[in-house]
Length: 205
Image (cartoon, rainbow, N blue to C red; front, side):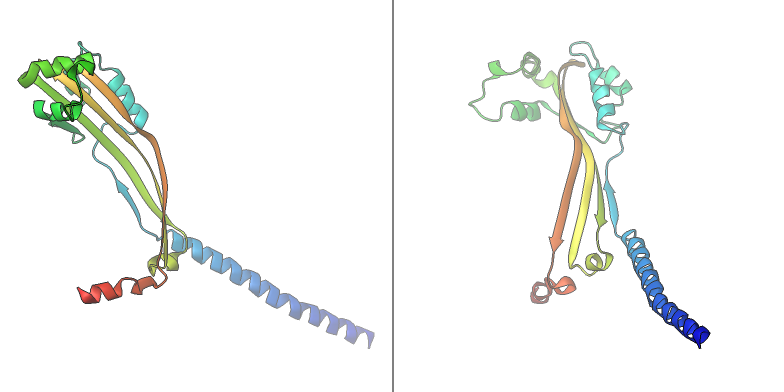
């Protein structure tokens, strides 16, 4: 009798351990499935072709430009040629005038000496505007809430570099650099109706 009771006790214990083991296994499977689904969320990257891989690289390039010494040929060697670098826009004299004297209240005499020199050169004055941006958008969070449009979270990281060069008679007379070395933003949208959100508007169109 004593041995039979012992076996029964063991059976009861084993029976209780089985559901616990199955529950832990189920939790592990759910966690793994959720992680796998998260990797399926959309990711995108917005950038233009550029010789620079970071903000610091772009800044180092412009640090090599010396006012009243660097020529247009030197700019091409630095890969700042508008014909080959899509980040460079040419500014004509009118563009330069509007940029630095946006209203009659701005006096030319208050501007940087290089800008004044370029404005006095009129038709011989030309500007280069550089605007380079790299943005990576990664959606994260619950896969099904995202896919069904109930809730979407987006992590945005990147950097932006901008600069203006003024050139007179093929020589740089002015430079200005700026931008954002680090961009890190979060976007979150919630739609209580999920995939039905905005359906009424679509029907009325």
